[in-house]
Image (cartoon, rainbow, N blue to C red; front, side, top):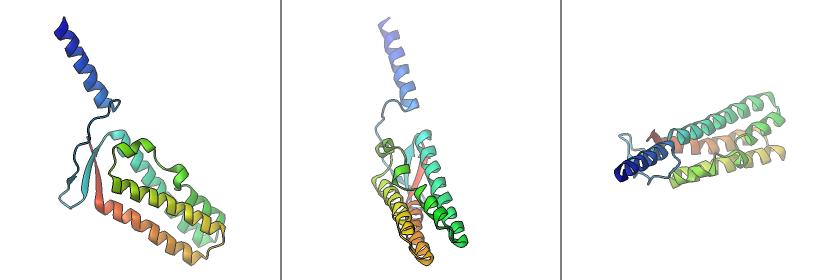
Length: 150
């Protein structure tokens, strides 16, 4: 009877680990064949990061389209969609590399700064310059990190 309880308890722990309800020790990051840091994450984390990246790409597209049309309200709205207020779940800090998180937070902050600059009347060429600096974080992150399912 006792061994059956241990078996059931062990099975329950494995289920909880699989669902991400119990924090597992992080697997050490390893370098991919292309030199990027590979970080093993649960599916929910990978999808949350991908959703945020799609939002950021949509913001970049929105900024460029609105800039071509001279629509500063739409430009500001596009930048705001990817600011710090819309950042991914803080629980991701437990599983993502520190450098990845720094780039993510800096990118969100730059979107906020860009929205504020647009509201203050920044010239459209300056918007493109700030956008180029901001997307440098995207390029750097994609060149440095790869998320892999656990």
